[in-house]
Length: 209
Image (cartoon, rainbow, N blue to C red; front, side, top):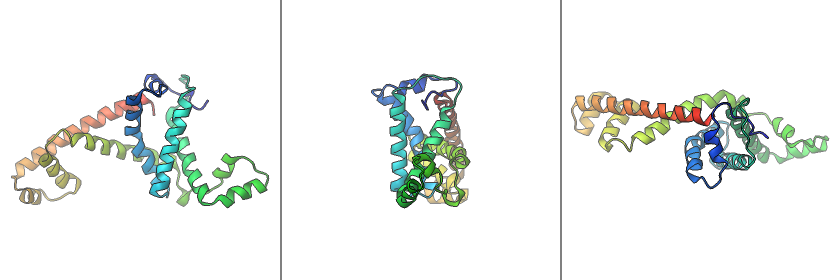
């Protein structure tokens, strides 16, 4: 069973075994859906194809969780990366069904082997981009959560000054505030974002992904 593989803390993943635990599934989806979707896009898939990769990966997870058993010797992260990579290659296979047919005519009846022979575009490897995209995912999720914790004006000052890298004088002039308020907004929002990133990193370690 490919899900006999959780290193230390299985409690959160065990919660996913219960299909009725909507809160846990929503939490898991919220944290990892954008990551899987973006990795699929970076592989060269269309938005529609990337969405199918995400849906099929989540469906596969839901099915496997039904027979989940704890095993501290293997990595769930490795399973998730493998599944995402498999679904990505499957989308490229669907673009070129004649390759699979050729494989069968050559006596190769292994669907996995046929898909694995489809070259990744530009040498794309999921493992090479997963960690980088996870860091981007953390930052985006943290910013998304902080937006609801500050005023729209405070976030706008932060966004223009830090994200869009406007000169502080320009931000102050456009928004009609003094420079000190821009600096204060940057400091407050930055502190909140760092706090949210730490919370998400802790959650990641709990999911053991």
